[in-house]
Length: 299
Image 1 (cartoon, rainbow, N blue to C red):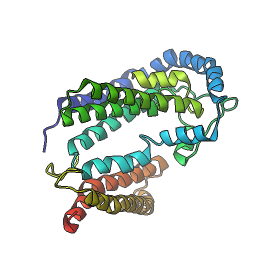
Image 2 (image 1 turned 90 degrees about the vertical axis):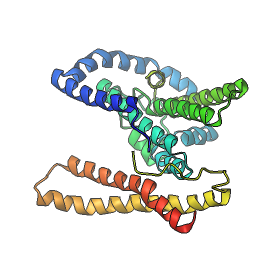
Image 3 (image 1 turned 60 degrees about the vertical axis):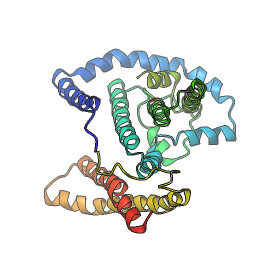
């Protein structure tokens, strides 16, 4: 087990300090009154740019950019991060989980502070291929969470790969950096093409532990073959999905009863509790239950 990094502790203390100070001095309203008019003006003035980009509308582009939008979404959290734990890259998994949480908090904080609208539809054509996208379309715009998360995660993933492989080849570094920039650019362009964000949202997105064992076998090494890795996927993914849905169903049944018993009438508190139990169960299954099943089955 590794010690807690200084930046993690500083980040948590900074978030707590921000919450206290902003509540006492009413900073949120003051910042909103200063930034919101300018951002709204930019969103309106950028609408013609979005319409020009959407003139190249094609069903293949719709499918491509909708697929890219699934990156750093809830399905991404559910599938990608567990794979990092199960293939032995525990440090990378922890750091990316913390980075995702930090990026989500910062992005949603800025969204709530600025409270800027998304591009108006119509005249902008909005493509929402999934239920998550429909919910995202009802939220504030600036900054683009997809762009913000993609920049942070792809950058850290590239850094980890270069350090882990101990590569000093300049060509490899240039190719990796180019691919990361291309990926970020496609995600940002896709958010504009789908009508979910204006260019100012994308620019804003660009500018702004759990128990486990470290000696888990790493994938594609003599300790973990390809077939064992496939076995982990076939067992692990259905297991965590089952735990996630069962914990949510259990919470939706139990929490309202407890709320009525203790006189809690606010539906928000019940909804928050359901989400807490659901994702706590998901985290427990990823880092404890599924690895235990792997050890019992020899995977």
